[in-house]
Image 1 (spheres, one colour):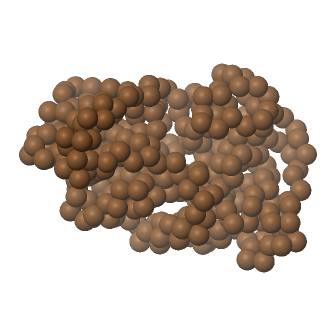
Image 2 (spheres, rainbow, N blue to C red; image 1 turned 120 degrees about the vertical axis):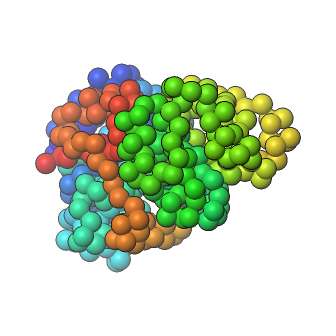
Length: 325
């Protein structure tokens, strides 16, 4: 089968598509013929050796797939051959077939196309877990979303609205802000053209943000750490700018807010039942048109380096999808 193989940590341009053996599912796994796999920022970090987890080489990257089950392990009873499914794999998604633990696999309805099913997993599920379990976002609260036109930022805008929040989208261009507005943002802030702290304070009438969904890092994080409301929750989601900030913790003391880490991948492993429940709610919201998957582009596996570079350069609006077939 075709698969993207990372032999050594290095630039995304080093990745190649190779012929490898189709994996054999273990007793608690299912084998999925992959129809679509989502491209995510952690994938780019992983192949460069910059992620929190450093797998043994060689490995196949890719953590979210959708496709059809073609074989099941001896101990699998809730998933059947022929079912359309979406799944979370720790590795292996950028391939024609992937074997995944059955607890990380869920059937998907006919109305959900495979590219959108793949795109719904990591970005939307991260935002959903962050806002529901980590921030306990309440109706009427003010939510600030950075990187609000990217895959997970756009998902946070949609989910924040679905949960009843007032959403302030923060982006670096008017084009990106218009995309955030089209997906439900109530207020728009272009931090490339004005003072971010002043804008947030003005929009919140000096109160500050109840919840910040922060996936940019660097100066953006530093500024927003000074824009929090009393009992606010500053969610640490990622560092798309490439700069990991340091927090003056005295701010959390005098402003009385919490800094909350969001590591969705570990959450799916430690609380798989809650993860599945979250996904069921997301799919219901999709059916009700409360959330949608905005696909920037769909590309073949051979374009993986271009896809990851575009993502690293923050040129993606919504999600990128790879198709192995």
